[in-house]
Amino acid sequence: MKKIFLTITLFASLTLSAQDKMITKTGKITFEASVPAFEEVKGKNEGVTCVLNPKTGEIASLALMKGFRFKLALMEEHFNENYINSDSYPKSTFKGKIENFDTTALTATAKDFTIKGKLELHGKTNEVTSIAKIRKTDAGIEIITNFYVNADDYAIVIPSVVKSKVSNKVKVKAEFIVK
Image 1 (cartoon, rainbow, N blue to C red):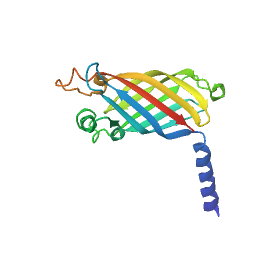
Image 2: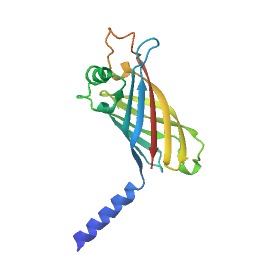
Image 3: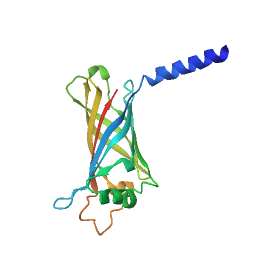
């Protein structure tokens, strides 16, 4: 009887703590490293996980590198094999906090919030700060942010043959609706 009670209590506490978090597994991350007058270098991943603790403003996301899709299959192959080395570095993670986050202050009109945290990519971790537009929607809480990363900061080497065609400064856009 004690085992049953303990099991039920444990399950109930896990369920309650899980309800404190909001999540999506269909977030989107788009990055672009295009250079004017050359072929567009742009990848998009629509299967990104994001978890938000609405009480503390803590936020985390995970993107699988092989989930990025490109206009050209050859670009996707080069991205995974030559730049990101997806077999060795299969994922990218972000862990941070939304400053002064208060869900009760959210409305249908987006408000600017600062997100600070650590982005791990290609085996390197760096601090990232970005402004996010956050609003309440019928589907949940929408979070949209844009920021830049430098390939050099993550030890991503752009071969000299294509250095003039691929930007070292990469624009990143993340879009999540957590519920």
